[in-house]
Image 1: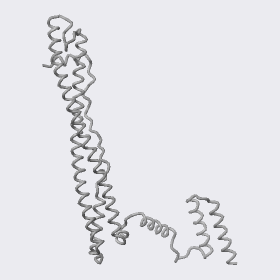
Image 2 (image 1 turned 180 degrees about the horizontal axis):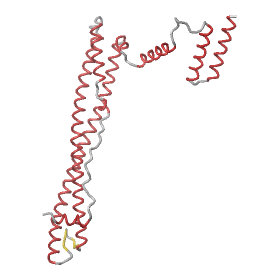
Image 3 (image 1 turned 135 degrees about the horizontal axis):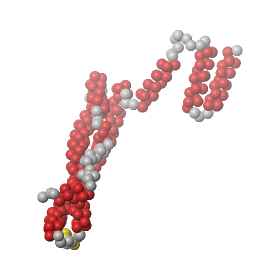
Image 4 (image 1 turned 45 degrees about the horizontal axis):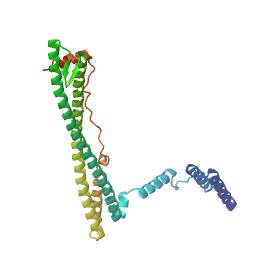
Length: 274
């Protein structure tokens, strides 16, 4: 009778697995039902049986031990752990090197563009001084058009060009200020990445020293020494700056230099300048 029952259970399990197909969830449910049926056949849940929640937690822990460099894995395989950390440090150092290059390019670009904008702003300031003087002279004499920048301009056209030049100067000054703010941020970021690079070099040297000691069996018989060395390495690896792997910066934007004042009022304010 028992054999027939067991055979029936086996057939039922096979049928359930076939019905469930390849779905992992379906297979889990089928196995749970088979397990429940087996326990029922064996007299049901007993005090001495390992609870399902405990069994599942043990399975989850076994999977974690298989995926991560846990302290247990470090203690059992210290050489391989050090080798893995050296590979991680090499990738980190490469990312930092790329970051330094990006920051250096951004700094160089901002400095060059600021230099170009300062030159253009200077030329516009010279034009403004000339245009305002020519406008005042023509206005006082009542003789239009005025000669500005080698061109003969009527009164309204002269006003338009003066306002346009002042707005362009304000725009250039705003862009220069924004880049100056960004350069400060870039300099700070570069200092942080450079410091991180030095720290990576120091950690790598420590890992290499530990690996050499392990490979030459200098501390293989010293469990406390191994544990301390691996613990220090693990702490250092965990403290690596995560943002250093992604050195991109949020630009610091300066407020817009151009306002919404009326054109005539803007022109009068420009002409009031000396």
